[in-house]
Length: 184
DNA sequence: GCGAGGATTAACT
DNA sequence: GTTAATCCTCGCT
Image (cartoon, rainbow, N blue to C red; front, side):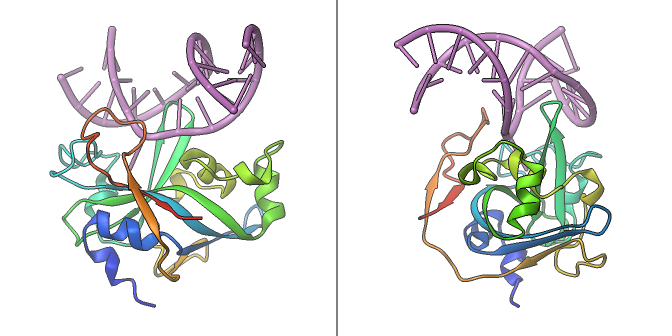
């Protein structure tokens, strides 16, 4: 599996991650599901005023400065988790926010985490995605390529067609078209 | 279907 | 003290 695209800039990695799959297992809850990534956003370093890493490392964002292929999880708005995949060489901060996905298997497990939500909206936002897949700070820094504890793995899939749009929920660098949505 | 308002933590000014 | 890479509920149309 060729994951070298993760070593490049977050913008390139964000396009390439569309169509890739995530396999999530949690031995403690018995959760097991596989999803296809359908929407991403790229966040850079010093070149990106909207990025958490823009002003250098902090305890919260330090994973973004580490080696590529790891998971960066942060807590926001007092109640939500968001998940990112770290990109770029070690020392060069960058990450791709995973915004949306579609289920491949384990639909029953996903539904159990999203009670009352129709299937079409199970994972159509970044915090919804982490809730559906039981992602929280315990997985911050987890290596998706080695998957040492059999909890979360990235599987590269075929490239999808995409369109670029402005990123959501930010107030700086709103002219960067760094959000990528897979075409239906 | 749409828009306003609330929830609640961590980092930074 | 303010802001944030957000989602859900409720009220109205």
